[in-house]
Image (cartoon, rainbow, N blue to C red):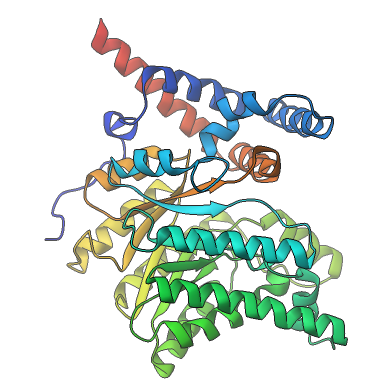
Length: 395
């Protein structure tokens, strides 16, 4: 039955139930560091330098940043994290977070690794999704030329056909495995190409169940209308629309390129506009649930509470598999654990890969935490409160 009580994301006992006192102190040190912008930038530079000169820093990284934000170095290594989350009714998306080197060999290697994540998720209710970035499978320069309507030479055309083939192979593998697959959003100047590949896959594989999901970055001022257009097309063509909603990850890059190239920025004028469209998109998806399958990727407490209210308003069971809440591993446990404890479907993105090759991901994660207003401070404050709460119980 649908919930009839208000959900609180402030229950710290639930939020940090999976953490021992020792783990909580480690988190305190990590977020205390991340709360300092200078320390973050210096730490990233020093870690990258250490790996470049083969300084033995790997063990330290696994005990700190890598250990907090990543599941392990391989799928098998991440199993402990999958099990720990599952014990609290939180599911996992295994996210291969190694950036490609831009060669056909690296694109094939990435595709093969994602195939392994699909194989691993098959039949395991604790790993309901796989995920990939299209730029891990082919050249963004070629996708940019395609979006701009420029003619490809024969070599570029062959490479583009291989990219399309890899995308279809992954979506087909998910379909055969009866699992779901998320296609991540990327930069606007080749996102149209990604969208087209996603919708072609949905038309093939989403006729009965929702297998393929596209991602909508609501910090773009045109994204709410694009979501509605995608839904309209899906209804016309008779397939289910898989929609993952996020606020977005490329804001500064988008604005800088728009200024450099002399076109209007695709980014919303302010955060309030992004919040407004994100919340409107949540309502639109819930209003059309069944035709749309939703993954709400958000670290915003208000938006997550709103979605629980919409689920209640539309008399939807919290465990309905058409709706998932999603957060990144190592962040916003107060959201993830409290929602899961209340019976909602919650899934964590769990990055994995060799430590030295996941450094670009870890660098972005650290910088995003310091740049997102209040994010690292919020995490840090919650950790301090939980440490104080536990101390008071012992006194």
